[in-house]
Length: 69
Image (cartoon, rainbow, N blue to C red):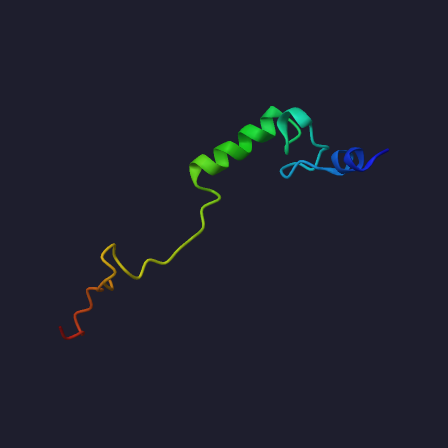
């Protein structure tokens, strides 16, 4: 067994852990590939951010009644 064969035989599907199929790399089946695509499209893999500034680079003001302008 050469180096390439060892790498492909040990590769596993990132969703279910079954052996990877070269036709659906890095997944084991079309089903797992479609599940992953749906997760991307629905925003499951989104990175949460905290937006402190608006698009002009100015700090967004909270409507705090105790704060003086």
